[in-house]
Length: 222
Image 1: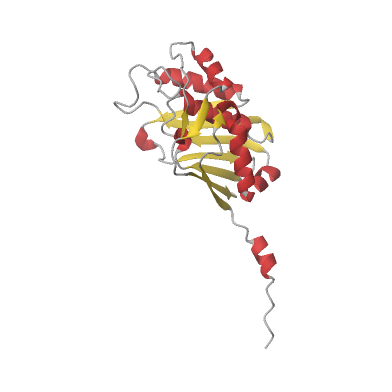
Image 2: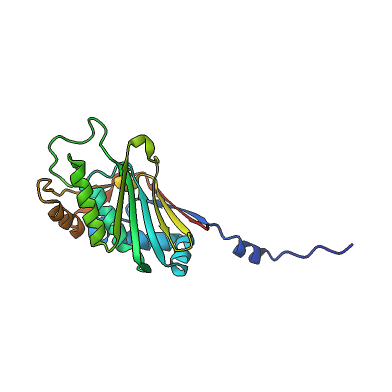
């Protein structure tokens, strides 16, 4: 009876490298919003070999983001910064698709918004500002809105290549984990002027809790 072939444990572990990483964040991303995206991707690639390897091997074709509660300038500003901070291995036709709620729940938000963390009262204005911010980041924009029940509960960012290979970033609390240290916002300004202020990213943010938030990174093949 032939002896079994010995197993090279080191080689087996290398070949079975996990396609999922969990990153805990407290204060690592605190600071000016304009640099939030760079800090975000530096952290993700530093702590996740999955993400680092994916970006080295792939050209991004499209980005998708699901978030029911994308209603205030601060969350849009953080998302825009993350888009701008993406490793610049982009195809010329890179597209961003956002799926969010078409209307705010009754009683959600303040009646007289005046700060960057207040919500837009007019969702149509939110839509115009969001599209302008995405265009400024160098992407074509597709905004899909739906009722709350039709959207996933989780907040996830998916980056895809032309073959359908996907890097998914799940944000446990979306961008709502970070709070602004202040900052007024003119909700009566023209939407393009509002977008200019958001893209500028002058606000400072800090993690809102002593407890960490989680970022889950997973790579998937088609």
